[in-house]
Image 1 (cartoon, rainbow, N blue to C red):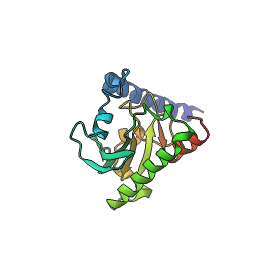
Image 2 (cartoon, rainbow, N blue to C red):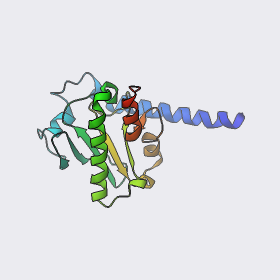
Image 3 (spheres, rainbow, N blue to C red):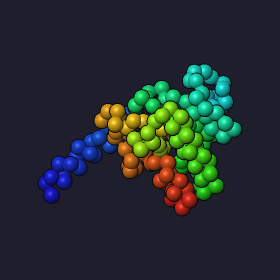
Image 4 (cartoon, rainbow, N blue to C red):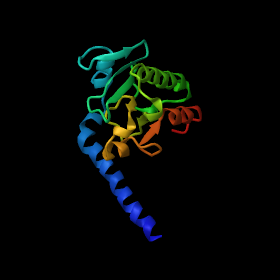
Length: 173
């Protein structure tokens, strides 16, 4: 029992650290952003450059994350504004599946091993931008401890794309 407590205290501290980090670092970005002011909406619609769009179709774009957790760290963002997974429902399953499959194809085009990749979404309030975005990160073995925690699956702050799809199908996000 004592050993379990010794493990829970550091884990609780790490979770608190992540929460505080996001609150301080991104707090101003999350205050009632309208789609007009949304950084990711402006990127998706080509209103600001950089970043260079690595892939684009009618529904979403893919570009390199500005703070990569590993050599290959890309974001897929829908062109339509959604704050996060929390506002989606069963009707959005197709969009999330297409974003996930598009990210997988994109990473594979870079000769990236999907088995050594993390593909998923942060869950509010642990989001850096108030616009739905899918992370594709590889190799996960390159991630430092902070990023391994930040993108840990399964956790209450980060959900794999597959888990997000299943949750949407059952409306339990």
